[in-house]
Length: 126
Length: 260
Image 1: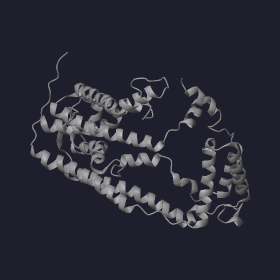
Image 2 (image 1 turned 90 degrees about the vertical axis):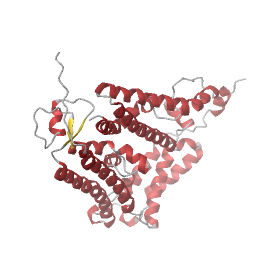
Image 3 (image 1 turned 90 degrees about the horizontal axis):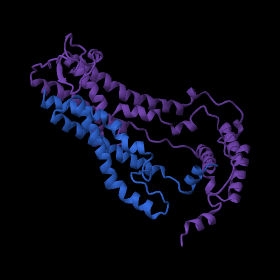
Image 4 (image 1 turned 120 degrees about the horizontal axis):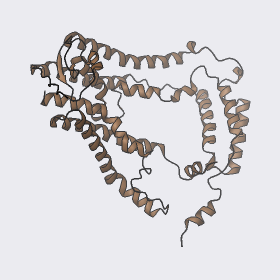
């Protein structure tokens, strides 16, 4: 019996809440990705600047989401809980893994971004 | 290195109104239609008679006891385990106990199984038919037009895919024809549907295929599975559980948690 398994049994993870959190994050990511595509198209960015724009802004969205929604409660819980592990940028209170939170948006929104980017680039520039 | 001059092609702005917007709007509306068709075609869960339900629930009971044994105390877990194993092995929960040990009936002859397969067929049809129709519609009406320029460069390999039906040798692969706009719509419209229909919509066939890959809950009690064998396997699983409780050593943990 490993200690992590035991830890999970003492304070279990509720699957439904985790799914709800992930879905909320996914909705935010796909909608913002489309909006970034619209702005990149209107600005007329091409090739690398466009993808860089997407990278920077989706990371910025993740950071904003962390600062506004995740950080207040998770830092307070880590500080007051007496666990001694009050790591900054720790999203394990609400999400499955750090990768899903920080980089998941890049994959989820890419197709929507390219679609709206192409559409508005074509409408404005071509 | 010599700069390659940027190709410009003069295109009628009417192309946007008569090709780009119709394809996009039709794609979005098909997605909405597919969502509502799936909602309407979803068959109600069938009524199960009491014996079948008891059989299924008894098996689930065993699985849940095994999975959550750590919230029970030692004595209550042992009591539950013994009762369940005895019932499983005597076949007390079986739907028809006299059929024990006989091979299960052919799944194709079972009307319930046929209904399940019909449901899957209906879902498949709801994806395949609109796609085929729209693709042939785009091919029939809009083939051969160059409508847009991609904002990022591509290698020459993409030319045959993006410029299908446009036989111009030296054109930059960035120029795309109407059929490639259709493909781009297929992949990229999921976020639009998320926005329009809510996140658990059935509008996009990509996401539907994702969910079909996932584990199916109905598979456990599907046709062609011998419930008696399932019960015997579950009894064995229960018998080998090494029980421990979350309350083991809780006093020690509590005392460690108190800081004076």
